[in-house]
Image (cartoon, rainbow, N blue to C red; front, side):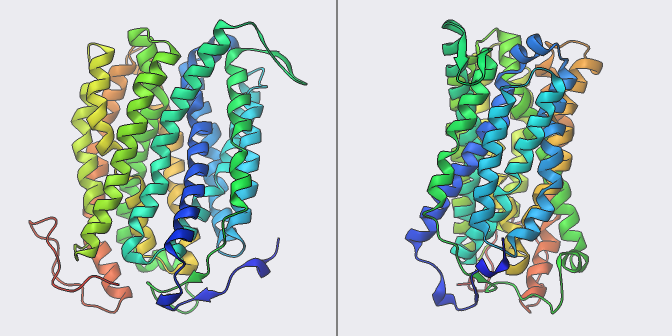
Length: 465
């Protein structure tokens, strides 16, 4: 793999790719992200059969969901971000998709905790290739004032993938559980949960074929001027307040996101005796429809407000959505019936997923083009270290050691939301003022007045074209 494959840098506004090319690429990348979320979250529906077969505790399951996946997902993110900034992003993504799909299938061959741990590490390593390359490519397909919506569409795959993982996984589990023993070619007879991993993992390879029809866009520096010789570390040192507040807030919130995604299916099965198929078709449908709608609407709203001249719209929407989802998640965890919990989670998912695309879009807006891959990789690295590893583990520790009852998942999820979400939302809102200063400096403008009482007040200047 050589750097010769990198397209030339373009700085002319007229050179932006056609919308058709851009949206086709977004479609394929979104499908890839959907598959990645299916493969990373399918384990949440298989918790109890895996615990029974491999004799595991909730804490060990949390390590498989968080640490095993998150360790290599985060460790590999930074070097892969560096690679994405220097070579063909499409090629890096293609290799990553192939590897994580095969490692998902390998989860179905696990015979003990450590086999499954290693396979989950492989899934994380492969998935680390996707988002830095995808976010960087989307940044070069669309001009800044229109970038938040396609990034949110891409990020919408997290909700779609999580929902489909529950729905498809539930159907597959119910199907193979009711039928005769599953015998796979070259493998032999496997348990239903093992067959689910193999089927879901191999099916994702279709994304690799579609990537062949995606073109690599020219890299461009149209938005942010990069200081001579400035790398990622220099960029962070110039704007420490924004990055610390933004990354700190989103890392805390990611703890809650992965805590909910990892344990909510088990909450329905343990507390209300729902089957995997029932969880998939009820809760999974809510995640897919309302979670996807929240991501899409937040991206559209951010782009709309930005075009109207509203400053830091993406950060304002992100911070407010985190604060608004807090009471809904607490209420869902304390609900007396499964259907009541689902009814509460439907509107909750609109706010729960809103930050998925627009939070990273803010980073792309404040990053030089040649650093976008590494900035995105840093973002996912920090979120992975804190969110993926600590989030699922926090809920498990609450059930094992605070409540001392594996059936206390509802109170454990409610307590996690109560502690984490207000802190996360506050940090994101505090990042708005330094974010404005960053944009003012890099564009050679005056910083202007600080944010006042009117959160969505439009600026007097015309929006960037």
